[in-house]
Image (cartoon, rainbow, N blue to C red):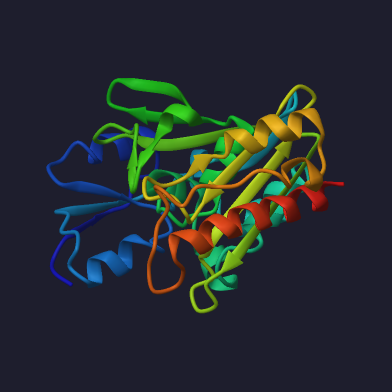
Length: 264
């Protein structure tokens, strides 16, 4: 570690102002950032803590949309009952300590290639709301995720809330790396009146993505058998000590079928 300033703003406007300093970085739950600092892979001049900002915490449901404020913890998301599929996803993140500290906004802003929330955001067609020195703006999930650890956020912007259209049925299935509980492959399936979303995390070389062929097949017949004849190409999938691209391709189909079956 090394010396840096810790800023604890009490409001969103104060946080945005503090983030305009050179090399300032926001601090959510710190589940990714703190280990990164320990390894000296990031060296911000100051950390701007979002933990004490009341307006960034909370969950509400209205008009068929679940709104989760950026600094809301995984544990709180797991406890809500308006969107059971998202609650199930949040309840599988890490362990109780991680779920108590980690936040949805931090996860969405970091866009780790093995993070769970991005798959739900893509599958549901969520809207990410970001605030910065030029005001607030809304970003569609399809436009927001732009590659490994890359998003549409501009310098100094904060994820203030994520708005999820609530599907008729949904489920998240992941094949876990036993030590970290990160998914080797995670699939979120969301069924709406007029469409089906399938978001895949943990597998793509460019991060989270939608399996559009499965979406089309499931829109016609929402059952595991609907994707039996489909296959996932290993091209563009990650390979590492845990799984080859070919095995991840196999897991995408298996996890999708399980998620569809669990929606019934």
